[in-house]
Every structure is written in structure tokens, then in C-alpha cells.
Length: 601
Ligand code: ADP
Ligand code: ZN
Image (cartoon, rainbow, N blue to C red; front, side, top):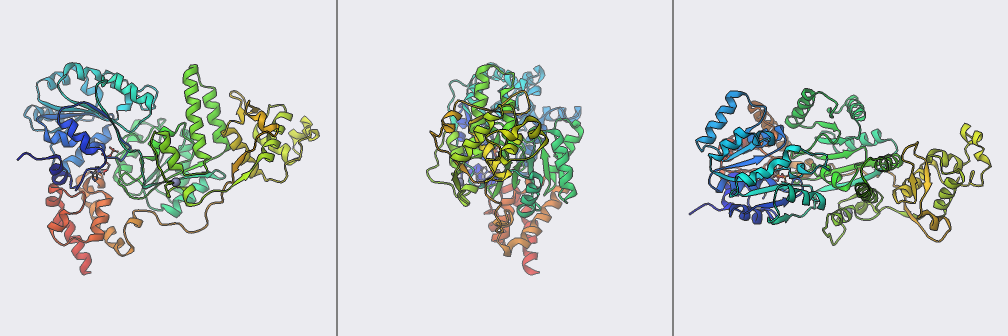
């Protein structure tokens, strides 16, 4: 009897059951259908084409934009006993010939290839002589010129359909917004293919947004309390800030590396390589870093600057906790972020309709930051999904924020902006409200204004929170060219005239209570932590010996299960998720020995 997808799932990958839409996608592809798959990062896209590839005749061609990712995926497949290889510019002549030979001999089930290599006439001609099981186009959003991952070569992939009309194509991405989706469909000629949209919720990620006051200290507190030895990413907007933050973290004893487009390709690759291979490193990076980072045990993603849209935010934070264990998405956010982004969007050279879209996206992002209700509900709603109950795993659910009636304060703020001539930034306007005696106040004679000193009931920090929320919610606009001077907007009138009430969020103090130690420790009971450490040490040794990243051997989730269940026989070991036949054979005995030795001593 022929093997079924379930058999392959268990035998090769060591998993008991499919997740969500995986079975439908696998069945569709197996039957030879084209499709577009939208699935969040960590959702399990790879199996959607790997399993059909193993069950269909011939070799599957996987288009992937990143060399490092390709290499690790191929390494992971080989560990599972799958015949896989890649073709990209990192191979020498001899290695390349060897891969081509295996292709001709029908000795490969999966071939990963960079788009520019695939599109070369030589490769296309070679493929025409082979039996192809399918084309998988990974990170398909790279066709979109609006995204920051745009790859011009992706646009030529329509040639696959023309030259190989009978080979099924499956395009996959974690970017789900409607414009990107239609661009993919159009560019890849997938008009007649079904779209599989998978649940976008990532319940294991805990979202927090904290008001910015001393961002580095806040970051440091977050890392040392919650993730003292975990791997994760810290995102910053500028290269300079990346360098400074990485250096600062190193001085504080964290193993932190920088990554941005201003570094040499060699340095960047070296840092990425270390991040993938070693455990517990912190990568401080611009958004240049991350696409296709396959490291499944990132325990946090932190943002020191606000992303421009919820799509970006969701994608960046989605890199945390791909193994399904608890992870944090943490962000600091303040008045200056709002001003900078508003200016960037207003001052952009894009056409009117494009600009309107950017403003909408930014508004959604700012709205998310200022939420007082469940963050996950709003985020999923933005992606067209409904979460009926608050999630219980975001800061607002865990510690509901207070709001206060800020109508009076908002009126004072707006009126002071007006009285000072709508020519100043928040700093000066707040000085006037607080009745400060500064050089500027004196020289401009702002101490004579009716709004001078009318705001002493609030402190500087509170005023900044008021202004931040007024700008975020569109009651004030920011001058795009100059120094961030604030202006009234059409919606400020009603507030100013006292016809409207406004509730603002009261910025919480950071929680004092000791928080949970986060996973993986949390997912391993205290009684199992020693064994867990021993298993990790053994995995590290194996990984170094073989020159592969540790997670290619076993994911953290598999090690955690071993530490907890303490299998004593190969049969018991085979039941651990992530243990397929090949890994059972290859690693079972040695890991069982680590467990037995631990039990004895
Ligand atoms: P994506 O490419 O969508 O970000 P991956 O394909 O890398 O996600 O899968 C994420 C993680 O989930 C991997 O560790 C993978 O082994 C695991 N995984 C995928 N499908 C299943 C499944 N059906 N059961 C258990 N684990 C799975
Ligand atoms: Zn929530």
C-alpha cells in the first residue's frame, strides 16, 4: 500500500498529527494543484510542500531567497534522512557539478535554489530534462515591490508556469495583507489557484508595549529579568542605533551582535552565522535582518523603535517562539516615535494614494500601541480574523490599564499649541504649560500667554503621554519638514470647544512583581532542568561536530519533552515529537544514554 501523508509525517518528521490547514494543502498539492498559502511565521509552511515532494515522483524545486536559510533547511532535511541539496552562489564548481549529477541520476527529492540561479537558461534547460514533482515558491511576498523584501528576480518566476505548465506550483508567505496577496497572484499567474489562509494567531507570543522613558535601561531590565540567557532579536530603526545598542548590551554582559546593511557582507554573514549556530545570542538589527531566519527557539523580539505598520510588526515579532514555546514580543514606544513616523510618512515622495495607504497603516500601528483592551484581538481583527474572547496573554489582558478623563488636559494642551502659534514642538509647549522660565519662553514672551503655567497639575512625563496620545489619535498633526512643530487638526476643534470628551490611557509603572521566568525554563518543570541542560550540552557538542545549528538536530521542544518524559527505550524515544525514523536510529541511543546516566547519577 502506498504511504500516506500521515505516514510520512510520522516516519520522517516524527510528528503525530498535522496542524490546521496543513492536511488540506498537502492533499491539494499532492493531487497536482496550484495554490497560494498564507500562514504565519512558525505555522509550519515547510511541511506543506516537503511532504508532497516526498510522495510525488521526481524532484521538487524550492525557490528560496536566502542562502543561509537554504543551507540550514537542507541540513535539517538531511538529518531527517531526506535526499536534499541546494544550488546557489555559495557552491564551488565541483560541488555544483555533483548536485547536477545527482539531479540527473534522480537521486534528489528536494532541490533548494536561489531565484537568480533558477532563472538562468542553463538551470531551466537542465530542469526540462527531469521529472519535477512541484515548484515551491517560498517567501512569495518578495514579488511585491512595496515590501522591504522586494527581489526583482521573483517577478520573473512567471516563466515557471510558461515552461512547465504541468508542474504544480505552491507559493507561500507569512505576509497576508490584501495588496501583497493580489500582487503575488498576479505576478505568479495564480489567478485560478485556491488561497489557503491559515489562522494568524500565535498564542504563545505575549505582546507588551511599554511607554518609553529610558529605552536602553528598560530593555536591559526586560532582558535581565525575563531572558538572561535566551536568544532573541532587538530591532532598531537606524544603523547607528544598532551599533550603539549592541555595544551597550555587550558592556552589560550580554552576548550581543549588530546586523545592518551598512556593515560589510562578510561581517553580516559572520554575525548571522554565529547567531544561528550558538545559543543565547542577542542580535541587534535593523529590519534588514530576519527574513527566513529559521531559528525556532528565539524567546523574544524587542522593538526599540516603532515599525511603520502592523504587518511589519506582526512579521517581525512572529520570528519569536516558532517552536511553540512561550515567547515575548516587547516594544518601547514614545512621543518621539510618533512624531518621527508621522513626519516620515507625511514627507514621503510617494504618490497621493500610496501616501494615504501609508497613513492608514501608521494609524493602525499607533492605534495598537495606545490600546487599552486586548492587543491580540485588535491585531487579529486587522488581519480579518475574530478572536471572540480577550487573549489573556498580552499586557493589557494581564494588567488592565487605567484610563482617565483627560478632556480638560487635552483642551489645555490644544489651546497652548494654538496660543504659541502652532510653530513649536511638544517640548516647548509643555514648558509653557508648566510655567517654566526658560530662555526661549522669555525671549518669545510666552510667559505672557493665557496658557502659561496652567498645566502644573500634571508632571512633564504625564504631559508627554498626553501629547503622544493626541498626536497618535490625530488631534494634533506634525509639521513634516521642520522640527516637529505641532498643529491643530479638523478633529481638534470639537475637543477644544468642549463638545467632546476624551479618555486617555494612564501609563502604567513597570510591574514590580517578579514575573514568570520565561520559557524554555518555564516549559520544563524545575525537576527536569538539570537533565534539560545536559541534553542541550550534548546537542551542542553534536552540532559543533557536524557543523550544523543545534536546532537542526532537535528542536528545544523535543529536548523539553525528553527531559520531562525520560524515555528509557528506543520505542519510548520514538514517541517524542520531532523524532522520525532516521533521528531515532542516529541519535536515539546516545540521547538515551544521557538520560540514563542522569537518572543514575
Ligand atoms: P514556517 O516556515 O511557517 O515559519 P516551519 O515550517 O519552519 O514554519 O515550522 C515551524 C515549526 O513547527 C518547525 O519547528 C516545524 O518542525 C514545526 N511543525 C510544523 N508542522 C508541525 C506539525 N504538524 N506538528 C508538529 N510540529 C510541526
Ligand atoms: Zn490580550
